[in-house]
Length: 117
Image (cartoon, rainbow, N blue to C red; front, side):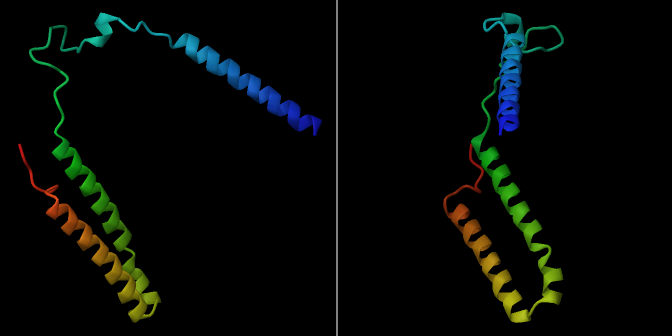
């Protein structure tokens, strides 16, 4: 019991020392103008480097990732079809595909898939 409590205390003290050391080393000047400006080969930028990002593009990228992962989940069903009963495989795969189609329909109805200005 003494060994575990002392090792816990030692690890806690070492962690605290490392946290304090990292916070001291990583202190940065908050208002350092040179580090906050964008760098374009030593010249001032012609336009703002903080251009607004299209949320529509972000939403389509997220939807693509979600459906891409779901397709990867569907891939092993072909191999599983050989090892299970056809009826149970059909029910599980059909249910999964119906959920995907309903999700796609929901996104389409809400206008997420339409590219707007």
